[in-house]
Image (tube, rainbow, N blue to C red; front, top):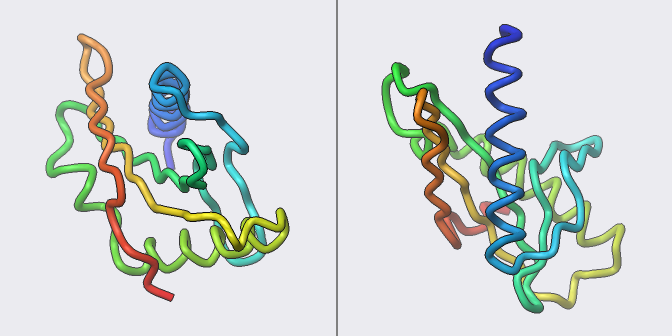
Length: 122
């Protein structure tokens, strides 16, 4: 991955976290990594533990950021989410998977937060 794309991804995550906090979410973890996968953002929305996958595309890139969350990616995020819930003794809490689809342009960030974007494939 190029430095430009890495920087874009970091900025998209930063902006997404800012907007989540502004919407009342409590951030529990960022870039949660474990042996089975990674979750970009772990947050609480009320009593619900939310696992947020951030996907970004530059304005000139083709396609929709949502379409880049493949079944394989969903499985990896779900495995990491289960690991997080287990390690933090949160298996009794409701949980969901959101996707932040971020389009980056010279004008800034256009973030579409899709709540309950997919069910756990596990």
